[in-house]
Length: 106
Image (cartoon, rainbow, N blue to C red; front, top):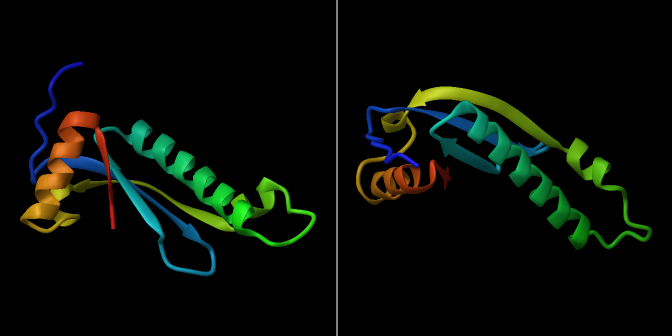
């Protein structure tokens, strides 16, 4: 795999998701649109699975019920500098993007 050279000026792809009755609960930033979408869907499934595991209802509702409660906010191209602050947050994001092609941000 070729070495990426992500900087604060680089265009990256951000995708967010969250419970429909709350604000965004997660965002992933990736070097490609496809990767951002795929990682967001994986995170949404993981979030739904955690909610299902934490649910005390018997019988447990189907996974689809939990997934229906999570909204996906799409994938958007942005400049990395518009997403993260200078300093440690930027350093961690750039390192994750250069090494793995993605990073999660708050």
